[in-house]
Length: 319
Length: 319
Image (cartoon, chains in turn green, cyan):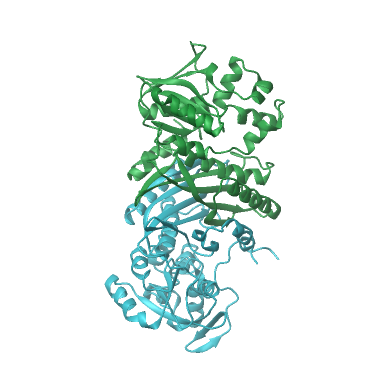
């Protein structure tokens, strides 16, 4: 069990409000008058979630985008954000961060509502937090309500961001559009709002398609079967990494995709394809939920042993 | 101008939504259907806002209390909090933090709704953030709507927390109740809700009575006159520090009081005294607002030169 999991288990008794969803969902959801409020808070830390040499504009973009992606996964439109910012004495970096923040807020049509700025001690890594608040017209889909028999779908393409990080680190060659997917993810806000009323469960892919699908299955008390060959890969990724089995496993475990992963009964397929056509965005069935528990991976129908790592595990405890 | 002020000035163009109140208030306030939502986010950093050796239970208490105090200042009752937590590898500290968090949430009748936990790099100072969300029955009073002619009031007693810190640091002697006021401030939630409909402006005293009164006056476009002899001091503070002029200046500039500072026309005095009697909590007029700008300090009616430091200034730029 990871340290983070152990800590969240310790926090759970303090989260008895149904709005907290047992701390098992992407966001808190609060009925407020006749409306559904969705609230999420994510942090990013220098040296863990971004590198000191990453452009500050991109750090700002990513901080906002990962939070808006949680709103997207609950079908909410953003109402605004609160920023928790550590000043560390480099005003050029601060200025660039503000520029990137303005750009991402403008791009996704939301505004800064408030927050806090603190002076961090000298040499402390930057630690940035953001709270996003949104409004959902429908009861936000949980990640825990998927049913046996549902198809598992994913939006867009998977693995681009993971390859983009490897390109940025100089480990592989590849086109700059993959790096852009790593540095400037685009939360699927409109898609999430359209899908919310017709899915049984929805979450975003932040830690890796396989680990996130396994979490949805576990939270829902069902088993997931994922077909590796069905996972949608971009032309850019195919050109950089190929489409063989190992490249597909890499894509499905890399994380940072910020695509939407959702479950829906087969009779919703036409409606889902209609949304895909309307938005010009691929939505692809990649597997199915069934009775039991755990995750099974297949490649062209044949079960494969699970890779040792299904995705990003937070704060793993040293053994 | 401090680095923090410069940064907030740079952020202001991103905060055009009226809910942001120009980043000049204690909290964001959002009209949501027929209700008023109040949102605030404060961070505390080890080595800046608390010491590595402070009990983790008290750090948790203070993190929650300072945010709930912002809700109190806007007349809101808390609906819940989102926690941003840095794991730093000391599970005893984490366990004690969770215990303190449970205690403070229970004391003030609210719950954990969600948040994020990250693994900070080794040796990084702890950086903790909290977002509190609340609901106000009345339009939340701003800090910027005080009027010339209003009386300036403060709740409770001032300076206890500042003396408590000095006791904790071994600089002076004094009773443990002052240390408790430093470590475990009590947000004035019920008071804030009762005052909200009858005040013209309200904020909490976090950085020091004088600097916070000066900020209210500046935001409202008026001048403040504060009578040092009127500032309410506790019996414990009088016994530890005396009630002489310098002790009063120390109390009025120390900060961390988390009392409410509010302005109201003289005809509200009976209503305010009624609330004071109902809650068994002193509410004391300490000055008056007038035309002009700036702050004037008097002692028994005679103007005094302002002390070099009116309170805690955030992230001052080195000259």
